[in-house]
Image 1: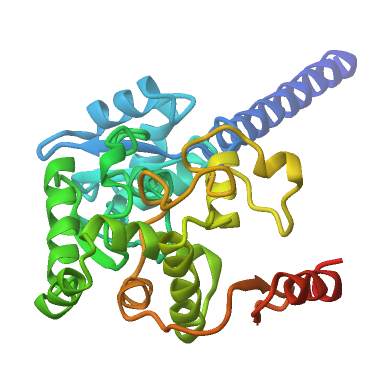
Image 2 (image 1 turned 180 degrees about the vertical axis):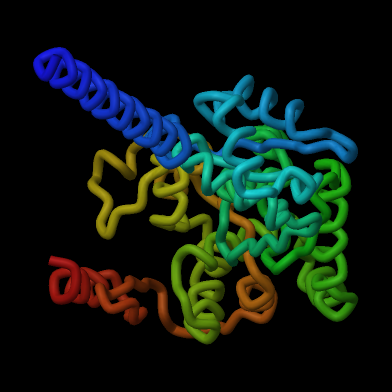
Length: 324
């Protein structure tokens, strides 16, 4: 009898152990489902919760869009936390590299994407760079703006506030209107007085924006460039080579300056056919209110300082001194 009771006790203990192990397994599995992200790589996705959607529909949509591993565990976790009535509608930026816990918290707290987005366009940004910044903010599709190459130079650098649902045409209109405001009547009258066009000024300003940083130096460089145009001497602007090659270098080789392009100001006389960047107001004003001087050449030192010279021999000496 003792042997039978002993066997029963052992079987009972084993069942208890198996039950405990089973429960531990469930706990670890649940922890894995809730705490472990679906993927490790960052890849933000837009996820919309419509007003009136319930937990079941939200969970199913999260699973369907690949943001969570299993809708059941998401629902279980929400019920466990008592958050079923706290899920907030709106547009979210969610990441499958986030855990169920993190995604749930975001939705409960209502961390939706702001309806308004601040976008800063720095001076000298190209059309493609502006395109990428707008796309990164979720305002346009990548490449959508860059297709309109005629806008290069005329998207005024500034900080703008756009609604998330603002159409591209309206974005362009707002930025272009700012350009028209900043290019005031005083500037327009001075440009006309000099017998130049706004296009010529913007092209020149786009070179100055990339060539030298200081306003006073830009005025002198503008004077050198306008002088070269008047005497049919090539502008020889490295900024145009950078634009053609799509790479910034401190020094460009002879081979670089021989590249075949209408934007190559080493091979072509006069201004390039269009702007190479979107210049700010100071670069535009430097192009208009340029300074005449005895200088004919310039270069930028590694520390950013601009060095001017009157003769080509002096320029060669400066190159040997500062760039080699």
